[in-house]
Image (tube, rainbow, N blue to C red):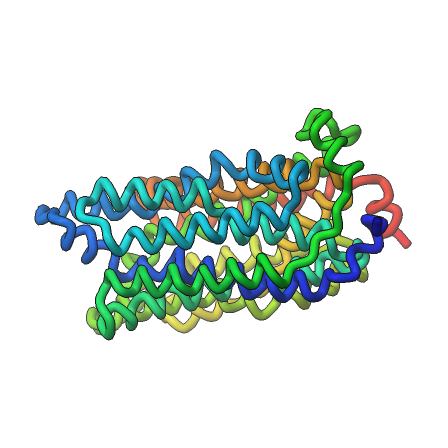
Length: 406
C-alpha cells in the first residue's frame, strides 16, 4: 500500500482521465443553458413568465440536489472507493441526460435535472480522487490542472449548446451529450487505477466528518473560503447585462458583450489555476489563498467606475487570474489537514459550501443591485473578499506563520 504523502504510482494517469471526464461531464451539464427556455417552450409552456420561471427551476434543480448529496457520496467514496463513485456518477449522468432528450413535459425535465444532481458529482469526485492519489508536495498543481479542465468545460459547454441544436436539434443534442459522458464512463472504468486501502475503509466506517478532526479551524476556514469564492464569482451575474447596457452604445451588442464579460473571469481562471497551484506547492497554500483574495478585492473596486466595456472585460479577466488558484489551494489545505479516511466526506462538505455561495451570490447581487445600486455589488463583494483574506491570515496554522516569517 502506498503512503498517502507519496501518492499513487498511477496518479498522473488518473489525473488526465479525471481531467477529460470532468471536462466532458461539465460540458454536458452546461450546454443546455442557451436553449433551455426554448426547450421548456417546446414542452408545452406558452406564457413568457412561466417559461422563465421553469427554466430557472430546471437549471437550479441539479445544483440543489448536488449540494445535498455531495457529502454522502464523499463519505461512501471513503468507504467503498473513489473510483466507484466516479463510475456511478458517469453512468447515472449518461442515463439521465439522454432521457432529457425524450421528455414530454416540463415536470419530467425538472425531475431528470434533479436526478443528474443526485447521481452526478463526477467533477467533485475527481477532486477527491486526485487529492487523495497525488503526492502531497504536488497536490495543488494537480488540483489546479483539474480545476482548469472543469472551468474550461463551463466555458465550452454553452458555446456548444449555442451551435449544436441548430444543426441536429435539441433532443439529439441531449443524446450526443449522453454519449459523450458514456465514453467518460468507459475511460473511468478501464483506465483509472485506485489502490485499495482496507485500513482507510475501516476507519471511514468507524467515524468521519468534522467530528473526527482534531484541528477543525483550518478546514472550517476553507469551507468558508470556498463559499466566498463562488459568491464573488456569481454576485455580478444578475446585474451584468444591465450594467453592460450602460457602457455599450449599440443595444444590439449588449448581449454578446455581456457574454464576453461573463467568460473573461472563467478564462483567466483556466489560464492561472495550474500555475498558481504550482506556486502554492512551492511557497505555501495559505500565502496564495490570502494573496489572491486580497488582489481580487482590490480589482473589484475599479469595476464600479468603468466607463468602457473593455475596461470591465479586462478587470474581470484579471480577477479570474487571481482567483484561479483558490479552489486547488482550498482542496489541498483540506487534504493536508484531514485523514485519508475522511477526505471524501470533508471535500463533499466543501462542495456543498461552494454551492451555497453559487446560490447566495446571484440572489444577494440581484437584491443589492436592484435596491441600492449596481456599484454597491462590487463594493460589497470587495469588502467580503478583503474580510476573507484577513480571516485566512489570522486563522492560518502556526507552521504556516513560521514558514511565512522565514
